[in-house]
Length: 236
Image (tube, rainbow, N blue to C red; front, side):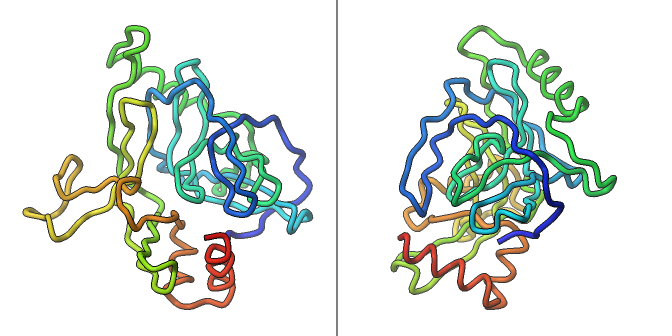
């Protein structure tokens, strides 16, 4: 569902999350450290990951944003299955295992958040204040990687793809995707905070997120994409 890239990078340590595998059904408890600040990725950085189905290859996903957790850690976030997750949390052998980050402009592989993103996030957290448990300020940042939300109300007999407008950091430290309900729009363009924006996780038909390239393959009925959808249908 993504593009194969360089080979032979060794795995680094991973952390647990509450991502539910569509293949195994396993649920892993998310870190106790909530996200307290997010910053969009605007320079095209990517996540590298591998899976057991093609163990000799690495794949890439565009990074959506960088997140600062309460304990000071900074990780990249990507849309994965039905939520936005930390790259380092990926550890299911069938779905994906984080292998590092890649700067495609410089063809450089690295394993820690870039210093400029870490500095940006920590400076913003300091600026907006912190008082123990009440550190989280709600934020909304635009989606810059072409993420689509997949909606179905009939078990994938039909599938609707809607562009994700933005991502919202909520008071509970969870980042959720927002889509536009055009029946509720009163002004154009739709800006952050608009009443027409709906949280995907409260949408009864929401199932998964797809990145730009995969979403367009589905729209064009690409055989590889349709095969991937078949796996989702079977898991559903």
